[in-house]
Image 1 (spheres, rainbow, N blue to C red):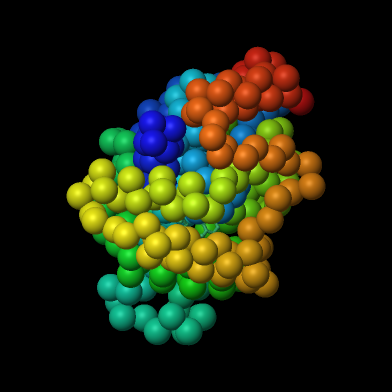
Image 2 (tube, rainbow, N blue to C red):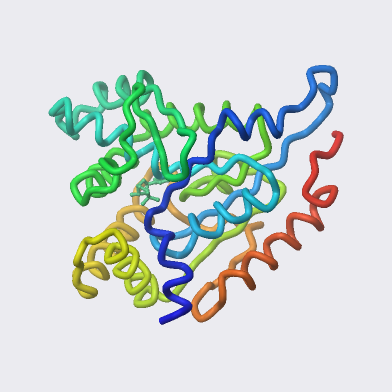
Length: 262
Ligand code: DC
């Protein structure tokens, strides 16, 4: 139970460090054009511990933490609010291109067109819509372009489903995080309880199974482990053990977690 609690805040699944602050910290001086940013890509199914791990790694490394799932959720929320038909691919593409998505100054804060939607994107309705919206290739193209732009400015720990396979196939470090489905459901249930939402374990397990199935079987950028990604199964592992393991990988592939010249 203690272990599950450690990982449980994963399902808040989103952190937003102040990108402004992080960019400031990671900014490469203009004259060092050869300086190279580091990308740590973390992919895996829902509630595997991606957000908890990615957030802590970003803190330790001083990188910007980007939760790409939150970006798909923000577009889905906008579509729902505008009562957009989720089969209207053209309109959804437009929304994804026009959405102004920013990460706020507080942890777990995301702004959509200037409005703080951090809590709103966590509803069940948005989760389901995000899963549908994220299967549309044109929506993915728009958000992948935005994700690449963010990493041009700063070293990042970026988590999602396709970071190591599509967004940054040449990321210096790629982790595929997984855990036993039952443990993932338990972590998610605990996390929901922590937010005052009573959820039944079987219902959560079913929801996670369905979302994973959709993410794995869609045609556009399905969830899969990149051939060169390190697989870490977090079942029964402590968060700090996993964190150290990944930090070692980062250090071994970069100049001790620092930007390296090309
Ligand atoms: O990680 P999450 O549950 O907040 O993601 C929301 C949805 O977006 C989920 O159905 C998976 C999808 N997603 C995706 O397709 N690609 C990403 N890089 C991140 C999330």
